[in-house]
Length: 342
Image (cartoon, one colour):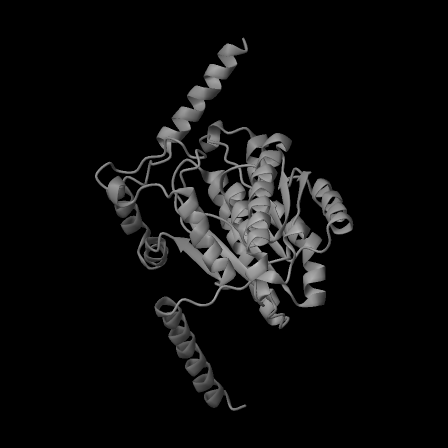
């Protein structure tokens, strides 16, 4: 094709992409069904991972829960089973007047939740548990890479082991889980890979170098994987990148921006964050930033001079917003050491 003609075709497709994106803002797309599909969630024992598990359970997915904490993981599984029982009771009550429909295609008695204790920061552990999942449950259709940790130390005060741990769990684990489950998705040309990153994977702040680096890495991994799937023309495999602002899960307890600004940009409620992410996942949205203001912040960071960005950070109180959090973590560590007589 003549390069000039091809240029006009590409221009038209780019503009059409804008039109389609605008249309989705005006008309909410229909959510797809995940009923009966195997959904694996890492870091399912608490926080966003637990809430993702409950949301997928309400949509009648078969759940596989991974967490390093066996007890908290089982607690999440108990909540999921309670949801399954409620749905089974509702289905039994509604059975006499039930009609045809997709929601009746899968018997509620077949819904199960499987728990596995897994340290996603250890490659061998991921691969061995993944093999067990394939044998005991089946092939994974929806992979939610959610597990995450934060060290809570300034760079020069952070032990190398904690830096490595942050990178392994927040970034490298995405490689291991994806390599474990993507081959079957490619074979079937069906699946969905969700990367739960952070707004700190799009722009950074002081004091959390290891966390920002790990989340930037997760974002880069996800974007490259998405392009690879497009290049392979595997359009049946969807990807969604989740980049929320500070979420009130306790992970960054103490983090504060300027007090005059905070009422307009408070920490996100975890339930709201997950509901927004679920809507994006079920409508095959490639990326979701919560709140939407994060899109603007990311855009401005890309076009403004660095010194202008610094001025904005200082005005918002975002330049040292992590310092109170780090101080609290340091105090807690000192208290534990004193308690243990170290």
